[in-house]
Length: 211
Image 1 (cartoon, helix red, strand yellow):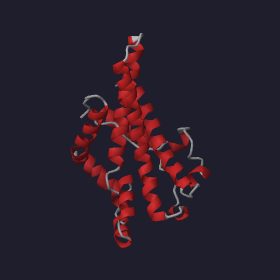
Image 2 (cartoon, helix red, strand yellow):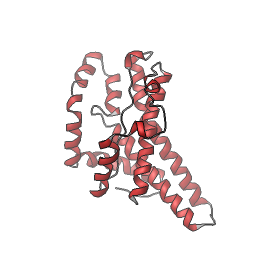
Image 3 (cartoon, one colour):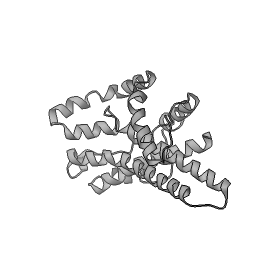
Image 4 (cartoon, helix red, strand yellow):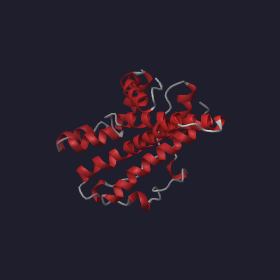
């Protein structure tokens, strides 16, 4: 699919992901994201040079599944009503928002397959856009729920572990990106996550295959 379509869909998806984190944090007592101007769909405050621009471009050129991230929204756990419990909900909010976008795209695809449309050219373009939205918004949450700090899945694990184990687990966060890069470059990441993402994509998308 065209680079000019894939990058904007990815940017929109990661922005929704981060805004969802900030919105739930605010509902649980921490309005840091709003104060910092991050509860907005304006892409400028969310763009991370590597995660939003460079990495997706590398994925496209390497024929890898396209993914990336936006600049993380600031969350102060100590301002949450119940820091340990609420951080679980804040962390899950981003992946859940992406799954919601994937389901919405799948619904539009189903409707387009079920009903006749007059303009075949427009129909094809919209269907391709929805298909891309579905794929990206399945890959993003599946990737982010992997339990390696600082990914969202690790925050959920930290919230579920006893305090001492959670502290020890969090201690690997400075090395998290190194671990992630190693898993990606050795293809371990996609060997583990690819089949999961593919099952979800095929289930929602009426049998389409991506991996």
